[in-house]
Each structure stands twice: as C-alpha cells, then as structure tokens.
Image (cartoon, rainbow, N blue to C red; front, side, top):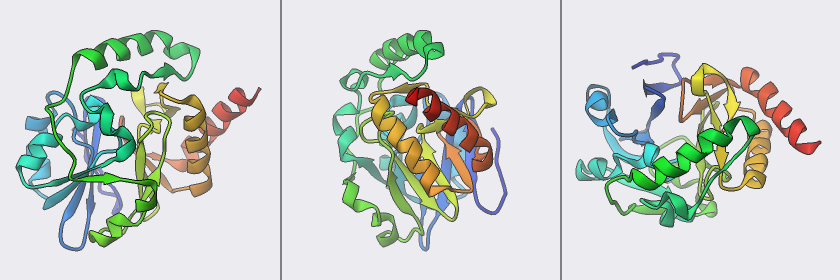
Amino acid sequence: MALINSGRINFYYSGDVTLYILKGKESDLLIDTGFIGTWKKMQNWINQYNVKHVLLTHAHVDHDFNAARLQERGAKVLLSAADKNLRQNFLSQPVKPTAPKYRLRNITQLVGGALVKSKPYIPDIYLKDSDRDLLKSLGYDAEIIPLPGHTYGSIGVFSNGVLYCGDAYTMLWKNPDVTPHAVSIRDMEKSLKTILELNPKWLACGHGVPVKMSKARPVIEEYLKMKAR
C-alpha cells in the first residue's frame, strides 16, 4: 500500500491496482474498486472517508470487482452507458495490443478476462457523454471526461489539475506508458490527444502511482508520432 499526501491526490495502491478518493461537499467519491484481494486490504483506508458514490472508469474486472460490495454499504455506482454490456462479459469488447511488445500480454488478458468475473451489480447511474457536469450536481468539484479506447465507455475525472484517467494511461511496472490494450486503438489515440489538450498537472492512473504530466507528455507524443508514420 502507498498513500500520497500532496494536498491533491488521495490514493490506495496495492499490487498494480490503484483506487482514488475525491472529497466532496457532503460525501466522498471513490474512483474504481480494485480486484481480487483488494477488499480486505482497503478497509482501513476507505473507512476514513464518507463514500457515497463510486465512479467506475470502465467495467473491466480489475476495476469493478468490488462494486457490488460498495453498493451493499450504501454507495451509488456510476458507470458509462457504453460499458453496460461489458460487466461480467470481458469478451463483449475484445481488446487488441497497442504495441507489438504487448501481443503476448494481450492473450493473457483475453483469457483471464473471460475466466474471472466480478460479482453482478447494476449501476445506479449510467453516464452519457452529455453528463460531464453530473459530479458537480452531486457535490464534487469535478468534471467527467470521456476517454474511450481502452473500452468503449472509458471515462476519467478532472479535478483541481488532476486527471483520474483509469486505464487511458498507465504507470505499470513504475514506468509511464500508454495502455497496453484497447478495444479501439483509434479511439485510444483520440483520447490521448484529449489528455494532451487538457494538460493536467497530474495523471492519476488505474495502475501504478500518479505521474506528473511533464513525464507523461513525451511518452504520449512519441506514441502518437509512431502511430502516424
């Protein structure tokens, strides 16, 4: 586990899965819910907060595995409508490797995703692209940012210079990199351009610790340049 106290980012990091808390006016928002083995470890951390809302950046099992448990505790779950059919059905959006070095890893993702499923849950709120300001109505100083590519419904949250980007970008193996897998590489490239245009100070990724945009930008620009050749 690792916690950061930068005045901006509250996160829980276990293994390669990272969860975030965004504090609101009257309650707190949890971004993603972790994977197998995360639930017991995260209890002391999550109990420090008044979590009433859970935003899933996408419906892959390593992000929504504990969504049902959080609903049982009274939290409302938010998910993009474009990922509605992805819940417990990884192969409904089969991913492709985003670079040759990820071809083997992509096979393991397809197999593992088909075998391991989260406990069934029904989101309380299905988000549309027009819902960018919905979090403000719930008391959070934050905007929802569509970041499709890794999945069709991938979304991020932008707040106070931090983009909580799910798997639109990663810090896997402690190195900044684009996501290794995407259902649509074209959409992923557009989302990377969105990140560049938004230019947050920090990227809070779904895997690995947060990274400064100054470190992520050169990696994104080099990837997009390579794909344009």
